[in-house]
Image (cartoon, rainbow, N blue to C red):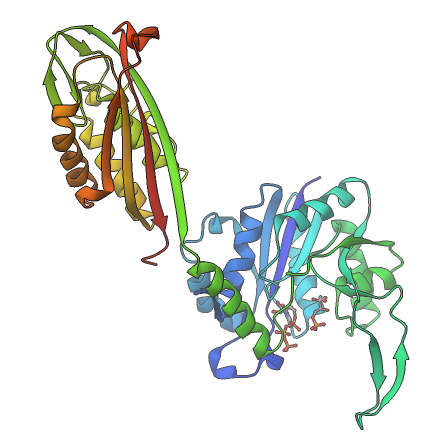
Length: 397
Ligand SMILES: Nc1ccn([C@@H]2O[C@H](COP(=O)(O)OP(=O)(O)OP(=O)(O)O)[C@@H](O)[C@H]2O)c(=O)n1
Ligand SMILES: C[C@](O)(CO)[C@H](O)COP(=O)(O)O
């Protein structure tokens, strides 16, 4: 099973009003265009195959700037839509049929809160052989039918009634031929693909929808979505990372710890200057943004790092953190060493951290303990370091 995605984004959003603000799928919520949120959800879902986006011919440049810099956006196949949602979906299906997709999830660009658990529920049903899957929520309000005069005519029993969502998902050939049949029958009044599937005689299976997966339809929906995301974005994104490193002690004339050379009757062995403390802190910083570890950035197999000062590694990690929008708020290192004595050098070590990381001295801490003569550290066979970094992301965005 290969699941292709069709995202329809060719509508004009008339019910959202304010045409001078552009189509609703390009308006900004939480600082980004609606469609960027929608696309990110699919592009980051590892089971997604080809992604077709159906846009209006007038929106080429709006679309290009909406996806600019979005990870994996180069996978998107763009096609042009028609005058109705039905026609736009049909165009998307035609385009998707040129790929190796066997199934399709058809989604509204105007539903930016789609989440992976819902995609997984649908995928499980498709995988179990259901030809058409409709995410929907049971209606919970009491339903009334009213005349144009605003007078209620009846209360409609809500038992068995569901509000349809997207992505409505199908075996690709089945939904494509249902659309072809509808076009041949000149039926252009379907508001969703499940309705076309039902009309064509396909069995449509319900999947539990998601309360957050609303369609932005009127202006208020967009304002509420913006408020919701802005509230989320306002929460501090505080992350901590930890790092651990150990290097062997061999006979020598001193060790470098936190950038300070301490004369000693042993040295730390390693490819670089073997500054175990800065290595642990480098890993801790990288861990706050999922950027791998020190070995990924400075492989020991690379001769250019032979004898290198480890402050280079730490400065590089700090730069990665900054590029990803992080502000380093604390750096804490615990050294575990039987000897040499660390205490006389702690202040210089903290000042080194402060200078390399570009943060104030009071945000840096170096502590040391012996290992009570126990184990490899106690036997002076090695020195270990544990580091914790605290970084706040997004505050400068
Ligand atoms: N000709 C159309 C009409 C709609 N859509 C897309 O279908 C989704 C759901 O449709 P809807 O909310 O009705 O969007 P609009 O048609 O844009 O809104 P309106 O009906 O208010 O004009 C939206 O992502 C919309 O861009 C589309 O691709 N092509
Ligand atoms: C497909 C759909 O999102 C399912 O709820 C919806 O039917 C499309 O939009 P419309 O507002 O009904 O035109």
